[in-house]
Length: 410
Image 1 (cartoon, rainbow, N blue to C red):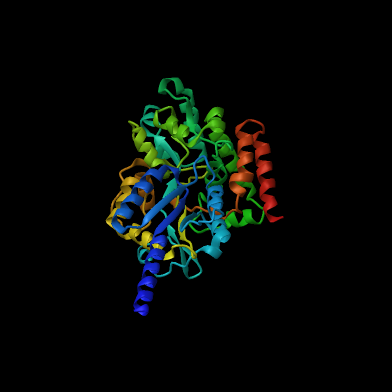
Image 2: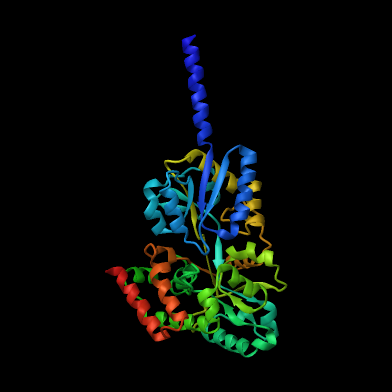
């Protein structure tokens, strides 16, 4: 009898322990999909009985600060986001090996550590200069011609001369503020224009130079002139005080002809319901033609080796292989999935344009996340803001950027 009671007690304790562990905490970095992700978490709970809590950092709050706070809270997340090598190196001692997980059969975009699969690709994302086709048509500008610096400069000048006629407040909606948390737009995504535009994918020439503290002088000079062009044809208020929401609102309301953001903004864009056709033009900072946009997995979900590992991997498997997961990724979160088994095509404008560029093979890599942790947003971001504020001119901007890059090697 005692043995039976002991067995029953042990089973009860196992059930309690299992129940205590049957929840997942996810720390993620995309404010624009928070609502959709929370709705999917509720659906997952209904289907599996596993509670899912979503914690978000990003947009105007620094995701890495939020993640570090969660790591120190005494309840580490079971799933969190890394954005490349610096994030992986920071947390790799905690990150589980997911080799052999069901989701890995359907993607070539997993984050790898040698032969180990360690990261689930959140999506395939892309960015360029989104444009309002109605405005360009009225100005007689063919977006297909905007593949080099000189063509874009001429288009900006023409649009600027027609601002009153076209109802524009600015030619391009661009942000660069540190207090608004938007230095990821400049110090990461825009800086990556220098690193990869015009190169074959996986060509690491320019990121390798930067990590050695060097730049290609002529290429970098042209890049700095491109930043000057973008800043000149935005407004100082938008550059310094614009948030992710106000930047989008200016474009969606027809007050800006171009918009410097990626297809991750589709959920917010759809809510604003703009009444014009939208697609992407390149970031053509060189005088030679560069006909492509920047497309890559932006981030990966990793699993805590010491957390609810099995439940976390099961969540990712369901996300990648179920109809519920496909519906969430494409229709609810307006993402372009990185999985071959997902056949739903996005209808939202920015993601649709990304898919078209990707299908045409006209894409450039993302290598900004190979920068040292905090360098893009923190160090470079402050220099972009000084330039946006008019505190320094373009020549000083170029010098300060090169000096900051030289400091990497020291």
